[in-house]
Length: 226
Image 1 (tube, one colour):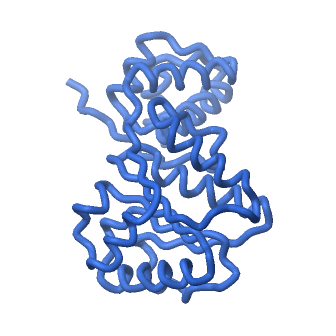
Image 2 (cartoon, helix red, strand yellow):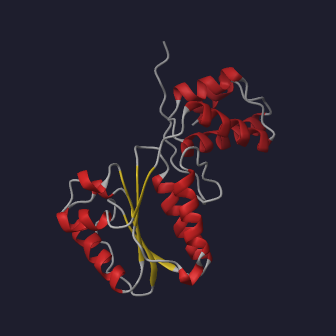
């Protein structure tokens, strides 16, 4: 019996608000789109997104960062991989704190200082975590501030929703995905949407190169060639 494969390719490049498939997360997406669209008059009320793995939290943070960069704004970004984060910069238009539940004590201290400075300079803060602020195991002054503003729960896409997105993307590429291939992709690989989209991109390129249709044998051949 073939063991389950977990191809963790990660988020596709170019995460944007427009390529975020909302599913049941329409309210959160609409709020962020409206916030970005307000330009220089954007309110600086904090925002917090919470949900499980593959619910789209990091996608939305990256999408907001890119949207503001396109407007000529600069942002501050902090996640648990950053061991020497910079000091707060007064020119920032937004502070982004990703997966705060993983912050070590030093990162929590930095996040708190950034939060205080952001509020003093009328700069918004958008943070994400795996639970509501009330139950996060963080220093109290940071935890309470994360709960000050707008809070949205993000839900992982259901399997029918993931199938619909895969089908939509495949159709846009002119790629035929049979039901058996779709079943194989959803049962053998990481199910978060970013990884599935990246997988489809790799499959499309490999199928074009080998001049073959996308089938289960082709997927296995692609994996063996890597």
